[in-house]
Length: 266
Picture 1 (tube, helix red, strand yellow):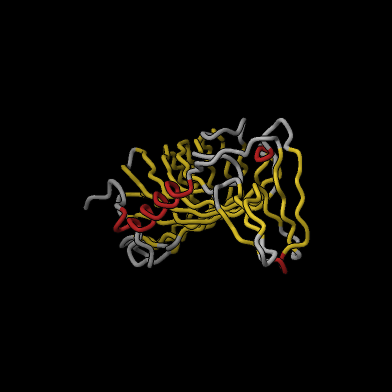
Picture 2 (cartoon, rainbow, N blue to C red):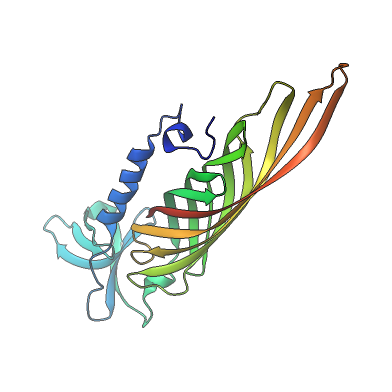
């Protein structure tokens, strides 16, 4: 039996997801949303405040006859805002620092990756959602699926639930960042062999990444990242000797791997 690694096909066997489709979707979204527009000159920005409390920032392009306003956001998206949705429109002075470096707001991520260790090449997929307090303080929570090779007779998929801290030292059209993740992973199944049973328990996962975002904060962008991942899998092995006496033993396995990932942030 070849257990050197888990191929994408077996990794998602029985899952409605198709890894090829996910890969192409991430690539397409990243290429489509790589920002191509720069800030308007003059040091000002237009802000449309909506009656529901939301707001749009960018450049007002047109005031239409029916009272609607057309605005181009900093991501390059042009929107027509109906008059009955608008509370007020104001023009604000832009500080010397790009406001996207400190602007607060919700964000999400989705990515796929490959992990490399002595067992071979393993696969993973995850999504997260969080809030940007500052470019150096972006906090989120996420989940996904990670593949592990836990022995000659057993391969395992885990479902992590993690907290993530993300920070950008500076923001440009190519923006470097770092990511720290810590969380709990839940093995997807238990198993064993002819003489023992193994019961997997909630375990620890951690990850440290460095990445590059093809765009600024607040814009849907393509990301590339790489780093180190640590998984500590807890399990209990139970068996019965030839006289019928039951035994059990706790086991802790440590898995380390280098990971390379791609995805989108929006």
